[in-house]
Image (tube, rainbow, N blue to C red; front, side):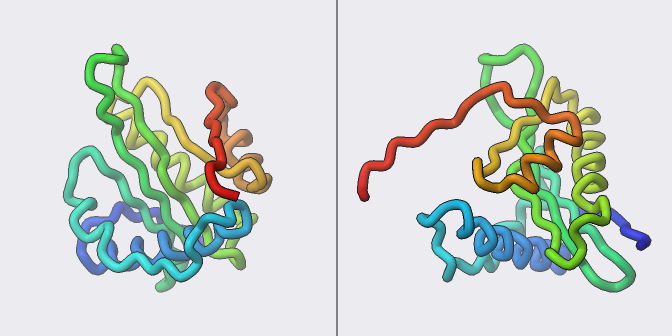
Length: 154
């Protein structure tokens, strides 16, 4: 399988990234019952790709997109000495999982973040998403913080 990782640099590619964010949202319903499975992202990334502090990649096999990654440089003001990056969203089509596409997307993002001077990359993943947690850990991510929630309404 010959996978190409492309940085989104046009509105047409941003439209494809929007479709992948929609797929990710629908997939996360398995791990969070508060996800709106009817949500459709139409234009979120349409202008983001032009921002220097934003990174959107599409994974492509032949003429077909098979996954994506969205990340940003985080503005933390003066709280940190060096900047941080956030891997905000990643999704690989189910039939293409297990082919190192996630690793390729992560590696490309690591390189981008390093080029931006990031000290580290943060991400958030649902506790129940064991395959994603395993992927991230296998790619050098470690548990360093805990995100907690209080459920107000039951």
